[in-house]
Length: 116
Image (cartoon, rainbow, N blue to C red; front, side):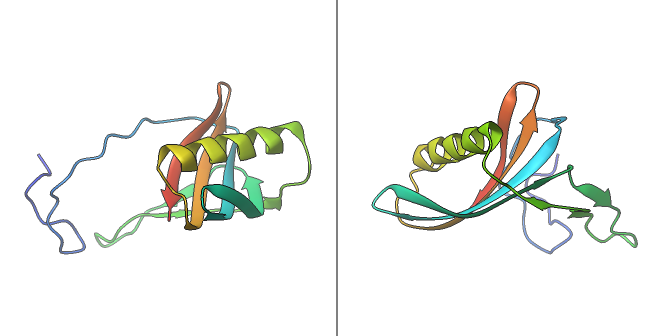
């Protein structure tokens, strides 16, 4: 029902993305740079899932982190790095910077977004 209509930002909704609602323990943010398919990780952060704040007055909702922690060496950190490598490879990102967000669930990591 949204396709072909203008959204709140004034753009035509021409594509539809289906999202799965996930419940997770932590959200992770991973910043990386890649060259010739080799991924180097710059920094990693984790914390509780984002909080949704209503946009009010018809404005867009905002999703904000209330707290984040620098990820130190751990098995979960290693699992997140492996997952990010696989995600970047699957998306075909071989060169450039990326900002990846994922959610850690009882079933392991689930991708939220990659900005590259």
